[in-house]
Amino acid sequence: MKKLRVTVDGKVYEVTVEMFEEGIDPGGLPAVAPVAFHLASAPVAAPIAAPAVAAGAIKSPLTGKVVSVDVKPGQEVNEGQQVMTLEAMKMNTYIYAPKKGRISTVQVKPGDAVEEGAMLMAIA
Image 1 (cartoon, one colour):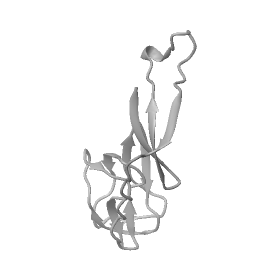
Image 2 (cartoon, one colour; image 1 turned 135 degrees about the vertical axis):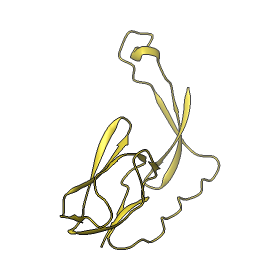
Image 3 (tube, one colour; image 1 turned 45 degrees about the vertical axis):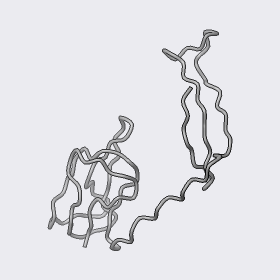
Image 4 (cartoon, helix red, strand yellow; image 1 turned 30 degrees about the vertical axis):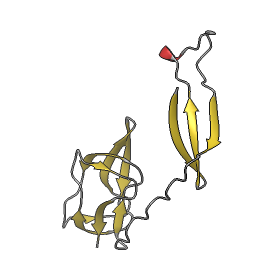
């Protein structure tokens, strides 16, 4: 059994998940573990809001690891141009420029771990 904390629509739940070996339950069926939900007994602090950043900020859409940074400070980019690749749970997420402009700062480098909402770079 493994305990996890899940937030759904701002409500925090503690979840108990039963894990089976090799993906098969004792009855021979594909493992679909029963999940029990209940409200967390202890209050959980609300997430801290990220600090305000410039209008041209590109923030991380998820928690993950920086695989590549495809632009450099001072480089001109077009709207929709790929500027970075993040990896989370063995899947790549491509980050694209939200507007045309010049990269003013790059805050991360390949190999860095980033949190959701973290500042990655800025476009002026």
